[in-house]
Structure formats: structure tokens, C-alpha cells
Amino acid sequence: MAITPMILPGPLARSWIKRDHAQLSPSYARAYPLVIDHGRGSEVWDTDGNRFIDMNAGIAVTATGHSHPLVVQAIKDQAERFIHMSGTDFYFDKLVLLGERLNDLRPLEEEIYTFFTNSGAEAVEVAIKLARHFTGRQHFIGFLGGFHGRTMGALSFTSSKAIYRKNFAPSMPGVIHIPFCNPYRPILANPEDKDYGDVVLDYLEEVIFAQMVSPGEVAGVLVEPIQGEGGYVIPTPNFFPRLRELCSKHEIMLIADEVQSGMGRTGKWWAVENFGIEPDIITSAKGIASGMPLGAVMARKSVMTWRPGQQGSTFGGNPLSCAAALATIDAIVNERMLENAIEVGDYAMDVLKGMQERHPTIGDVRGKGLMIGVEFVLDKQKKTIAHDHAENIVTKAFEKGALFLSCGKSSIRLSPALNISKQLMDEALSILEDAVAEAEAEL
Image (cartoon, rainbow, N blue to C red; front, side, top):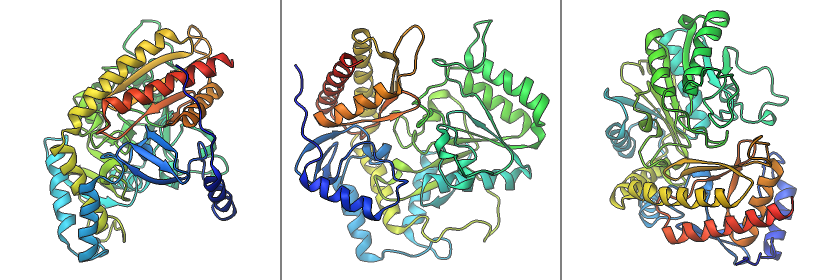
């Protein structure tokens, strides 16, 4: 049954949007005219009272849903004690407690040290500095399609969209990009029909290391275990074990950018755990504090060897954010959100696979837990990119009451709160299929 779209934006939303455009940077890219008033769990309401199912969680940020009571109370309690004291220069309990919790959750045998930041991009900046400091080397390997932030160091690795880099050259020197292990859209030829992960890493060894840079000059490999902005792309089974082997062989730091994929998004605390290997450095942010600004760089204690003053942050590890992060971890554990991410994620994958059979423009469905990508094409055989079609679906879904975002060249991502119910997931998927059908009728 067709779902009647709402008339959006409403009058109050239009007023706020007009005022926004008069005051704020035109670099803000809004997917659709949503002006949020409040949210609870996986539902949000705009200023005109329209209700939406949030399938973005603020771009994989509100891991425990909007305004989870435990998180809200933790923020209130900390605010009544004190709001700020720089962890770079002083000690306070929440900073230590959160460091201990993250050490307990580490996907490494060796214990870790943690450095706190304000954001994912800042965490990436710290991670690449740490890799250079520890190895004494200057070069890095990044991956096409990767997104690591927009600050100048992080931007040197970001290659998901050209607009992010336009007019900002030169970037940080020393970063060499190779294809990511994207089995649906392979860039490198594979005449022997090998695991595409081996093809990519053969290229790294036989071309990049042999012809462009000696591996002995490479400080680190920065990689998303599952590419986020690049299209929610999951590498093949051989990719990470082989990459870990290469990094260990040449004493290169393997840096797992878990800013979007971490903190339970895939049903495990860290997405890299799905591939059975240990990184040397991990970056985290987004879902770590359910919406409060916080990032973290976690590294083996044998790697984070810099001295006092070599790295600092006035606001990184703010007491309110640390309190929110501790409450986030408690909520995820106590409410079994990792299990829910797997259960509801598997259910969503089954429904989406069924939709794929019914709709000629759904080319690929992939995901782990509640990190799911649906790639749209104009021709399934040719895999013709369908960017405008995907954006049309996002808009139609918004008008029908569900918030989705695109990613990659023509994919739509599903990254709702880890505690989303199967009932709300069903409702959102029904809206999505209705939007797909309408958009296909317009092709």
C-alpha cells in the first residue's frame, strides 16, 4: 500500500531554514529540509510536529538512540559537579574510568593507552602523528573511497568524493592511495578469479612497494574496516589477514579507523573483530558518547610512547562527554544492544534481499549488524551508477517519514540506533520500498 507523503518542510521549518541560510556557512550540506525539534530512541519530530523514523542515528552517532535516559542523567550529574577541566593538564575521575573501560573493550591482546579528542577527524590526525612518531617514517597508504575527515591531515587520506578535496591542495605529502577491496566494483583486473583482497594487496606489494615507495619508509596503513562514506563496503575474507601480515612483516602501523564502524555498530565492539586480526592503532568517535563530542585514539602501550607535551587537547575528553561515553557503554551492555544489532540487522538484510529480487534497481545489499548498505544501479548487469535515482529515493523516504542518507556513488546506508526495534525497522523498510517503487516508476 502506497504511503502518503507529507508536505515538507512545514511553515516553522521553512522559517528556521531561511534564518539558517542567512547566518551559517554554505558548506553545510543538508540532505533534505529536516528541522528537528526533539527525538526519543529511533524516532524524531520536526518543529511542525511531523514524526520520522531515524535510520541515520545522526550519522551513526546516537548509538543508544536519541536522549537515552542513562546518558541524559549522566550528563546532568556531571554538569552539576563540574563542566570542564582540561585532561591535558589535570586529572579527573571520568577520564580515567573511560580509559579503563576502553582498555577492557580493546580488540587487542596487548593493553592500550588512550588519547581523547573532540572528533573523528581529530582522532585521525593524532593517529597519523603517532604512527610517524613511533616509526620515524614519513609515508602512508590510504584507500580510494575512504573517508577520514576534512581537517588537512585527515583530508589527505579522504578520497570518497572529489569535492572534499577541491581547492584545498596541496594536501599533506606522503599519502599514496590504492584501491579498496570492493568486490562489487573492483578496479583492478582479476583474471585468475582470486579473492579480491589478494588482488589489492598483490598490487600494494608488486607495484606500490616495488615501484613507488619502499615499505621501510611507510609509517602506517590507514583503513576503515568497513568503508562508511565510500558506500558501506565490506572487504573480502582474505583482505585483512593478508594486510595484517604485510604490516607486521614491514613493521608498518595498521591503523583501523573505527570512527563510524566501531562502538557496536556491526554487533561487535569493533568492526575489525569481524575479520580476526588485531590493529596497532584504533580511532573512534561518533557512537562513543551517544551524541556528545568525543573521539579516542587507542594504541598498543608499546606504540604510544611519546612524551608529555608532544600531544594535547584542551577540550578532548571533556567531563560531560566522558560521562556520556561511560553511560553509553553501560547501556549497550546492560540492554544487550550488540545482540540486538545482530538480530535486527540480520532481519533487515533478509528483508532487503527480498526487495532486491523485486526491484530492478537494487544492485547489491551488504552489511554487518546495523551497518548496512544498499547500492542502486540503472542496470544490474552493467552495474550502472544511479546517483540521482538513489538521492530521489532518499527524498521520497523523507517525505514519507523515514530518514535515510546516501553514501558512495549510488548507495543508501542504514545506520540506526543499536537498540532500534524490529517493529520500527519494519516500518522504515516498508517506507523505503515504497520510495524505491515510486522512484523506479519515474525512470
